[in-house]
Image (cartoon, rainbow, N blue to C red; front, side, top):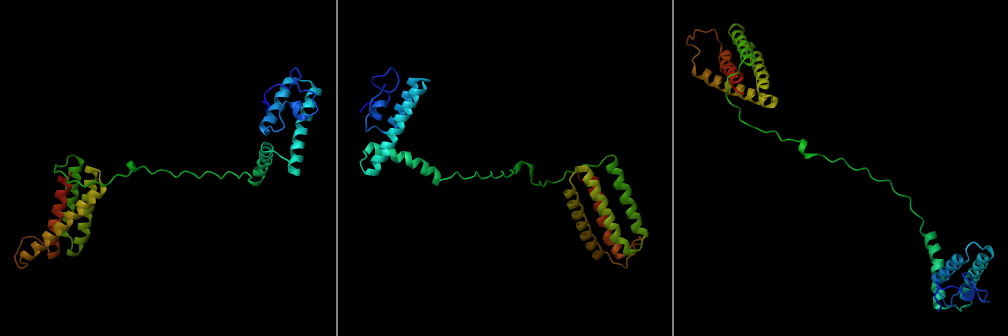
Length: 237
């Protein structure tokens, strides 16, 4: 079998004038399809821009293809020609059967949550330090006024006075340590402890005993809570 890259015989770079298209392309009759194409391209490169020579090359190439097709229809096709014809027909068929699918739009990426931004609340015991400046005089004045109102107001007003005292303590603790939830928690803890102590005190003190203070039972029970709220506002930091 003649190599498809060899120059055609009897020419100075172009196809020969042999009677067979295989001879004009310089290949054997059982050459593969790749060899036929390679010989065609080699002959076209050899003849350059000569239109007549290029036309003879194309005519020889077409004649080879037509002869291969005719031999296949008649059942007289070689194994090399059969494989070449199959490759020639299968490639367009595969392209026709498998049309290109439209590209699906890319799914948007989900934003990633940064775990560093979420901080767990930390519980820490407050330190004892006497307040200074405004944090000292505001609770002293406010709690003192509430204690005075407790002495002169009717017994039914003790609930309102305890609420005002608790609110004042929350504000002062939040200013001192900058933690609102901690300020609320400690204020209600002091309120509950004070009411518990007031209840015990009210049980221990005989109402018939003269205490020297115009306090009813409800007012006496509220007194320890007011004192603890004042101490918490002044000492907790």
